Image 1 (cartoon, one colour):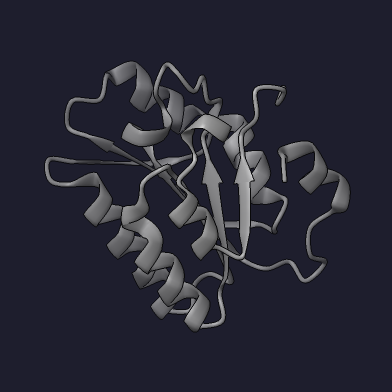
Image 2 (cartoon, one colour):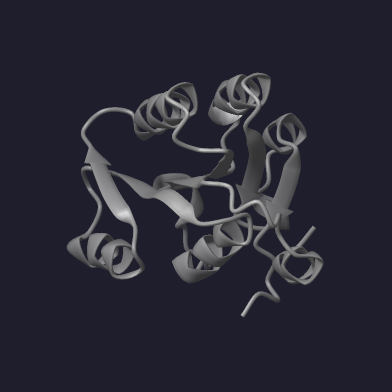
Amino acid sequence: MNLFRRLRDGASDDAERVGLYVDGPNVLRSEFDVDLEDVRTIAESYGPLAAARLYLDENASPGLIQAGEARGFEVITTSGDVDVRLAVDATEAVASGRIDVLVVASRDTDFKPALEVAARNGVRTVALAPGEHGRSDALQNAAQDALSLDADVE
């Protein structure tokens, strides 16, 4: 399902709280040409954002950090493994009941367990791939909704 179809079909009217977690090193790559505004728009189609976090490693450029902040993301930079921090934060948001929908933007199968835990706890799960050629079938299959940022997204 692409962005246009998701927006056309409409989101839930229940105003569910959405947690958006973006794996910067795996999504913000030149071969994908991802616009963070598109990522945010897709997540917001599920309801209001309770969290919008962009995870970057310690080598992220100041320009990338500023771009994330300018688009309303809380930018988390870590010297350790970005994947571990993102998965722990997302799972903690699920366990604490702060979100009703978990959106993970990545192409990394490391997030499959976080999606599975969320689903078992009654949280709707969404795997957002940076593009059709950047999708992880395992991650997409673990989520209730599997979306891609297609080349035709404006």
